[in-house]
Length: 392
Image 1 (tube, one colour):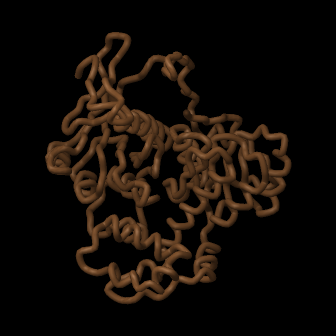
Image 2 (cartoon, rainbow, N blue to C red):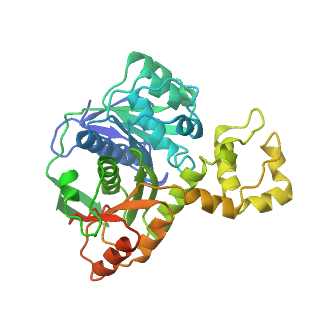
C-alpha cells in the first residue's frame, strides 16, 4: 500500500493529472492486485464497498453490489434463490457459494444496467464468484480479500487487465469529509447514522404488520439509497433490490423509473420469457437486450420487421399487454424505500402497480396525510424513518 496512486486521467481523458491520495499522511486503505483502475472506478469502488459493508453489518448475510456511474444497478444479500431466479440470472449451470449468490442477485436485478459494472463484495471473493464474473462484462471488483483460485481466474479477464482491488476491512475514514467543487472546499460530517429495524418502528398506517422479510428488504432498500445519487427510490424483494431509480429531479420519475425496472425483473420470470429459444452463439449482452425488447411494447414493431430471426431459433409467441398486466398483478410483497419524503400520493399509486405492500420514507411532507391515506386505501404498511438519505 502507498499514500497515493496516480491515475490515467480523471472523469474524462482531458482531465489530467489525476490521482487518489491520503491527506493525513496515512497509507491508502486499498491495494491494486491487477489492472489499472481509473478515477470513476475508484468512485464506484469506495461507494459500493461502503454499501456492502453496511448490508453485511445490518443483516449478518454476505452482500454484493453492482455499480455503474456511482450508483448501484443492484444490491443484494445471500438469500437462496429459486430455480426460476437462477434461470433468469443465467446461473443455473453454476455452483454458487453464499457470496456468489449475493452477486448473482445484485447483477440479475437489472442486467442491462449492470453491463460493464463495478463489483463490490462484503466477503472474500471465492472461486465460485470469480467463475461467475469471468463470463460477464465487468470493469472491476473490490473485496476484502481473494482466494488464490479466485485471483487466478480474475487475472484472465479482459486479456489480463481486469481491475482487482483489495480493501482493508478495518479501515475507517475520518468523521469529517471534504469535497472540492469549482475551487471551493465543502466540509461535512460523514453520514454515519445506522440503518436498522429501529428506523421502522414508527408505523403511521392503519395496517401495522411488518413481517421479518419485509423489514430485511426495507433495510436493503434504505442502505442502497444511502449510496445512490439523489433523488432516489428503491424497490426490493426477496433479499435484493429489484428496481432502483437514481438521479432524477422529480420523485415521481424516480418511482416510475424504479417501478419499470421492477416490472421488467418480474416479467423476465413469465413462462413465455422462460421459454424463449435463442440461436446458438448469441452473445450474453445481445440476449439480455433482446429479452428486454421482447418484454417491451416495442416488440410488435420488431416482430413486424422480422428482426426476431437474428436472435431466436424459432418465432416467439407475442407477450400481450393484457398478459403482462395480468402477470404483474400477481407480484406481491414488494418493499419500497425513498431517500426523502413522498410529496404526493401519486408515488404510492405507481408503486402499487408493481406489487408494493411495504414502504419506508422519512416523512415530513405537508401532504403526509395524503400519502398515508393512499397507503391505507391499498392496505399498505408504511413507516416514517425520520432519516433523509440524500447522496451527492
